[in-house]
Length: 449
Image: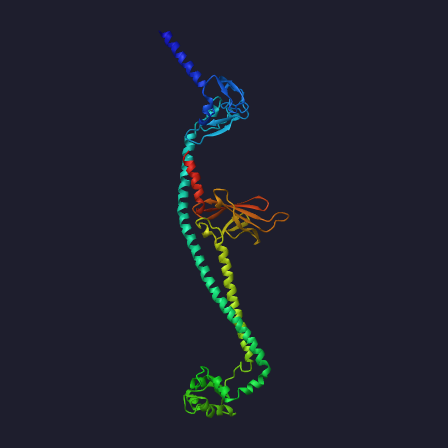
């Protein structure tokens, strides 16, 4: 009876060993259907049919290496690390049993002297913790992104309102501009008519008539000269600094507070004609040609209106250019259009102004253009993932400088890195909350592992 028991145990152990030896190593679940135990094995590429016992026999029979997934026999073979608790992946078959632990579950070193530990669980926990931290950061970034979208829409609407207001102002200025141009033409025509009539001396004589002087004193053109108008324009001869008192002005008007032309002739005019008494205040414009004054005034007014009109037109052009820029489907990048971000790398300070330009400043104060805004150049599915700047300052014996800016997810907006992988070709990383949506999809894929 004892002998029978020993025989049974030996048979069981031999059978178990046989099953273990025929277990197919190095294949993924997706490929197990090709390795069902049967009399023969068909190479996956269909090139050869071999006996099944020659699978993983450490000799390469198939051209595609599919008969040796668990050994290093085939140079083009691949070994699949299952890595329960972490990410599965393939390694080259040549790395199987080479004394180096490549799979975290140690499955690649099943027949070597190297004692590998199964570290998949620890690696998986560590990676999941990192992913969870990233997810929290992304969620915060998405919250900020929603706020920035609102801010961008508000800025967009404000600029549209400003544009409408400026267009209305431009229309009004255009009307004024046309009117002032006509006024200037009329003034030029008046000058042509008045010039032949005589010189300034003739005009001085003309002002000596009582009617001319009366009209000159009658500022409000109500056909009367008042005490206030007399005080404003008449002074004592020999004492021009002292103005007339109210009583003196009344006396000059014959005791009246105002005088028509008839009374003016009999009172103030006679006093003005005498060599003593009073005279009119000196008027520096009295010797000027009125036609010249009119022309100069019209020209000055026209210039003022033209300058105002041109300034408004420039503001309109700037606004129209700004509003024609692509700030994202939800205007999420609008908040960047008036900002600049700096990063100092060794002796250089790099300045990125989105939708405008990129510059490089040296410690000596020299500034070089690394490109002007061109367009979005993101890949399909992430169109707003990259910004292209070109037409920068030409390099010595090289191309014009250009910069490619990659946008990455983050809770703050900052310039994170600057590289020059090839001559005068720069790559920058701009971190911003509005780039978080794409990263969220990637993190979701990691969390499902």
